[in-house]
Amino acid sequence: MIDFRYHLVSIVAIFLALAVGIVLGTTLLQEPAVKSAQELTAQLTKTKEELRAQIDTLQGREAGNDAFITAVTPELVAGDLTGQRVLLIETPGSSTAWREAAQQVLGQAGAEISGRITFTEKFLDPKGTGVLDGLVNQLKPVNMVFPVTATAWDRAAALLAAALVTNDPAQAGTANTATADVVGAFEAGGLLTVDGDPGKRATLAVMFAPERPYEGESAETQAGALVSVANGFDAAGKGAVLAGTVAATVTPGDVITALRDESEISKRVSGVDTADMPLGRVAIVYSLQEQLSGRAGQYGNGKGASGPIPAEAAAPTPSPTTESGS
Image (cartoon, rainbow, N blue to C red):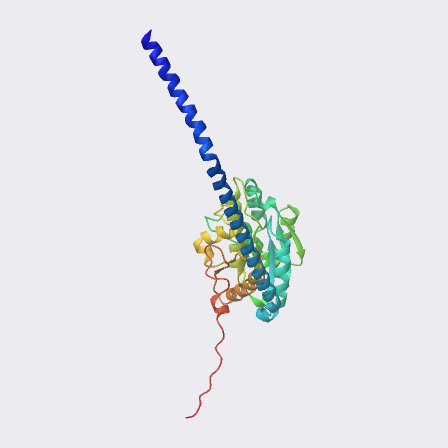
């Protein structure tokens, strides 16, 4: 009985001591804790205001830089693509505004736009590759042979590219009679739409990647399909550029990243990841010019880019020097 009372009193004493400690601790620490929280809040507010000011300054500088590049773009690209015909290729999710802005700069560079094709979501549907293959087999010339490893999109790109681009300047502006019905068949099948007269073949192609990376279980496959298409047009013509932006984080559905991850294709197809910026549109022109010389590169601000524009375009032209007599 005494042991029980002893233990009971001990337990009560323990709980009473804890209660008193909590009360005393709360009372003693309440004011310092509040003061500390107020100081932290004030510091965070100050930091936020400083960051906001930095962002406003950077945005202002960016706007100024963009305005300057836009103003001098006609001089920067004048005559760079004179005599060339360019096919524009839009993809599901690509930006019409980016394409229109780039089209204007291509015109300032002296290029003639042969027309535009826009691929539909049906074209990129992995479940429709059987239909795509059947259409290609039905339409391809007998002498068109594909590698054993070619995908449905590789084959479709080769067939479409033969109908829309050429590496022979003498054939530019003329239709390929061997594939005259190809574009119409793809259009009738709901795989693409057409604007202008792309059947009169171009020498160069610019493909616009989706504005945002593809999502879902087929995202990586769809991004890879567009890289295959760009590669097909590059092989059939005098060069191709894939233009878009890159995601802030690594994303399987990012098309520019998919291009740069394909080491062999990225050596042939140029990529520009600043298509939403005035400098990026200049980079597209310079990249096409580089393609005409048989070279390719990756340009912009994202991972895998070697610089904002091709190095040779950025280098100043040496001025002639004269010898002076002593």
